[in-house]
Image (cartoon, rainbow, N blue to C red; front, side):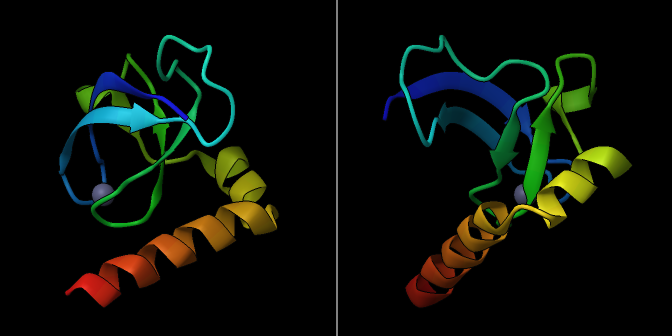
Amino acid sequence: MKTRASTNVCPYCATEQDSASCLSGDSSPGPKSGDMLLCAACSRWIVRDTAAPGNARRPNAAEQRRLDSDPFAALVSEQWRKIKEGRS
Ligand SMILES: [Zn+2]
């Protein structure tokens, strides 16, 4: 796993993120438009979109359906939320 410089602003909590890590593989130069990102601050899935304000947006209906039907996506979000709650 490699962490890359990437500036995104979460459309849910407005947290600016200055880096991103990929869950698998490490050959990508960084997130590209259309990639799903988990906001480290609010634990919600967002979509990298360089055409959107802050380079990120909320998932559209089709993307949200895909997230909702992916047990891994829900598991990652929930586990990250629990880790954060354990820290507070
Ligand atoms: Zn957020």
